[in-house]
Image (cartoon, rainbow, N blue to C red; front, side):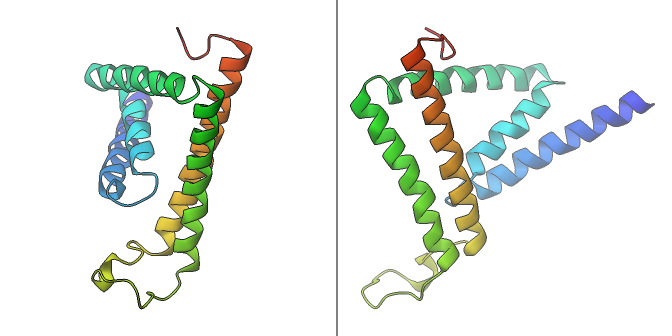
Length: 146
C-alpha cells in the first residue's frame, strides 16, 4: 500500500511539473527546465519518459560541448546566460511602458514580476551549467561525454 502511494505521489509530481512547464514555456523563465524535471520524475516509472529523458540528455550534452568548444564560444555562452539573468531583473523592477513602445500594451513585460524571478533563476542555473561544462572541458574530465 505504501509503495503504491509513493508511486502515485511521484507520478502526480511528475505530471504537475510537466504541465506547469508546458504552461510556462512561452514565457521567459523556467518552462523548459520544469518540463525536463517532470519527465525525469516520470522516467523513474515509465519507459516512454525514460527514452525522452535519454534523448534530451544527449542533446543537452551535445549542446554543452558545442557551447564551450572554444574560449570565445564559452565567453559568449556565459555572456548570454548572464544577460538572461539580468534581463529578468527588468521584469522584477516592472517599469512603466515607455512612450517609444509601438506594440500593444499587453506585450510589454508579459507575465509580471514572477516571470522575472523565473528568468533570473533560469539565467543563474544556465550560468552554473555553462561554467560546469567549461570546467569539464578544461579538465577533460569526460563528464560531457565524447
